[in-house]
Structure formats: structure tokens, C-alpha cells
Image (cartoon, helix red, strand yellow):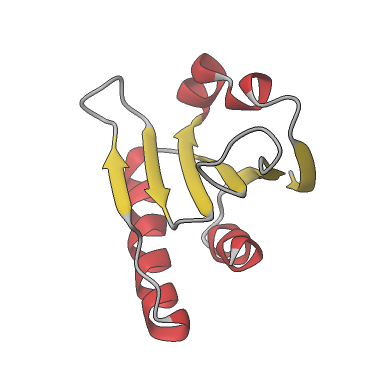
Length: 112
């Protein structure tokens, strides 16, 4: 599932994609997928396409989605159970620095 999410967001031109295995650091998920988008419009398009593809192909819907525009902007979080997707604008990604926060996690894949 995590690799499928990576494929989809890469197709939609998210950049600096990182797949982290956080299973040894937390019980909330096994993987975090992080990607950078140019703007919130691109993030929304990726989110919508992701939902559509995963629902059609995998019969999978997100458990929860947070559009954090109201809480600082530039961040969409989609919880797919074992996989949590974070889409950020570049500014927001630098500000929250989740890679730094989860630096003990194993990097499974990185696509620049």
C-alpha cells in the first residue's frame, strides 16, 4: 500500500518523496509517506486522485483526512491505517520538519 501511494503521488508530480518505516518508533502507523507539492491546489488534486485510484483498485478509503489549511496551511494528512500520507508545500514541510522529528525511522525510499 505504501509503495502504491508513492507511485500515485509521484505520477502527480509531487517531489522530494520519502517513505519512512516508523514501525519501531510508534504504533500509530507502519509507514509515513511524505511529499512536497507546489501549492494547495496540487495537493488537493493528488489527494482526490489518490482516493479515487485506491478505492477503485484496492477497495481502500482513508480512515481520516485532515486538511490543515486552517491550522497553518500547506499540509494535507491522509490516514490509511498502516500508512499515513503527508503532503506539504515546501515552506510548511521545512517549518514542521517531520523528517527531523522521525529521524530514527528507517528510510525505505527517497525520490527527489
